[in-house]
Image (cartoon, rainbow, N blue to C red; front, side, top):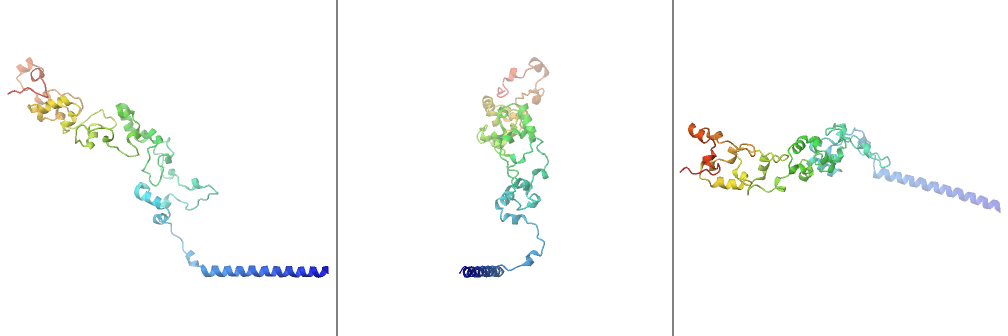
Length: 287
């Protein structure tokens, strides 16, 4: 009895193994048949040497990067692979992002000095290198590149000397209008004329040309301007800057224009012109 049972079990095991083998073979053949039908082999696709990707091909996926370079890329608008030597090689398991990313030093030297090697702290986006946020770090190191403005602020103290660079220059390269803080000298004054008299980093060192409108001077020198404007003398037709030449607070001598208008005997007796003419901005009428 036991012998018959053992024989039956052995026969059943052989049948089961045979059935499993047949099913596996059939499924493999079916899968192979499907793969061959749906995806035909095209070996010719791999018979050529591929050409490097162009920037427009990169842009099909990296659209925002392409847009940044297009709008504000500056001198960084060249072939992507000039910087990105290895493409699509990032592996999270290897954590090799820093290794793959291009290094500024491969092209740039320490143009901002040895103390400023961390380029990305200011140039946060290498695809828009000229758009630089006015960070505290950048503010503290402005003089590394802009030494002359810093020297002017120190040499010629003014209220501007007490301000941080970022107060006016809210982003790198941004030049604000004087009107953001200051009122005009007179109504209708064009703000682009401010810096012609007031150099922005030494505003108290006032300079001007002889054609500067008298109304500019009159905004501060109100009493003198009112007298000059109302005087019937010929001085009313002479612009302030013609006499007060080029340098603020310069007081001219009458002889610079008038030389010797009277006989020597009178000049010897009255060496000071204003002893008779009283006020250069409102000369007494000779009529």
